[in-house]
Image 1: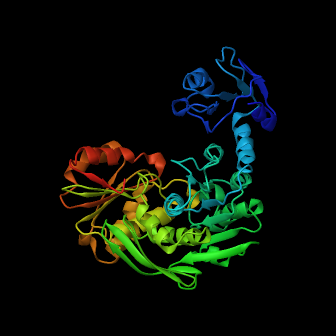
Image 2: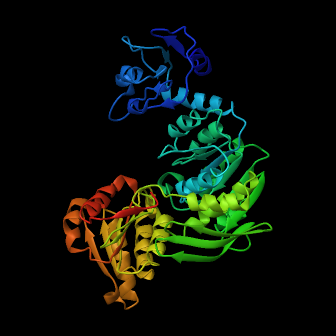
Image 3: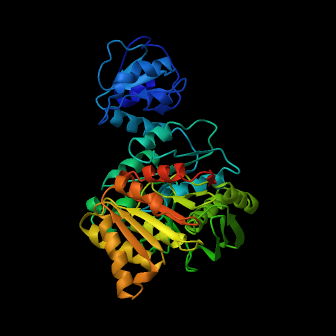
Length: 464
């Protein structure tokens, strides 16, 4: 505990404040406390973690990190000016205690899928720490780093940003040996401006990387293809110009995706037992990192079969009546377009429920209209839109059909509220539908997914 005070410049107080108490891991939610944890008291919009310090001690917390005195503290505490700043300092300090390969992952789309794929592959041989849930920001990353222990042989850290300078702060903690950028796309352009701004923000990481490390880029992205970092650059993608590329991609409905991965002199016939052609773009960097860290071809291929999607990230439920694709965790133009293309490969009536894509700034209306046009081009049979900006998806879809004289080939509906949409759903969904639900997280379309699951019995979630 005294080391925590020393590293953060804090002051020990409370019972047993002078005791040598080992601390293992850190949490911010008192309900997640395990014996020996550091409980970090964070002031949030809805509540104040300081109110739950003694609950944390009851659950076995070794110590609490606070930014105000807790007079009745039931255990030792460290007082700091800012618990969030102190946590980041601890995360950076703790990471430096471990001499293991650290893989950082960022990008406008595909971060979580790539993180899960890389972790699944490395997990066939190594004990791997990976980012859990949505802990990819300035609070979640240091919490993840403080979960490292002597058993870990590699770590895969997702790094999400929304403003300039944020990647620098994350990379100062993570200090990745390999940094993957999955895509430069229209995400958080309300704060980052344009694609060049997104690139500039993501590549802040290179100032804090291992200089002997590797920049692992999606080379199908023109901005990433042209970008020249100061360290070794490896590219991956579907285009054969890349260092690692895939050929003969084959999608078998919701069951699997297969491809041939060309990695230097090795050819891997890979099968991923999950939904979506986008999985190939996650498998490519996973194969490279697996080989780099000494995995055999057989271990890499087993890792692909061990991959499982995260709920809300293109996870699929099969029922007697419908196929439900839950992809409602987040959305931007690139991820929605990819989801529509994957939906278009399925049989039955293809129905998409789309909501607002947040954080697009002045380009929002244009980009929403383009998604509507993409839905028409993908042959989506029924489009349901909900949200203030989603009305432009609706308009883009109907305009594209009108312009191409295919007005009868797709139907579209717009609802101004989620409640109105949910009420109408029983009259819209038909037996045999393949149904995609996607929107930005702030739209809370998980409510729609939950309604559909409750009213479509006998569904079985695939890969979870």
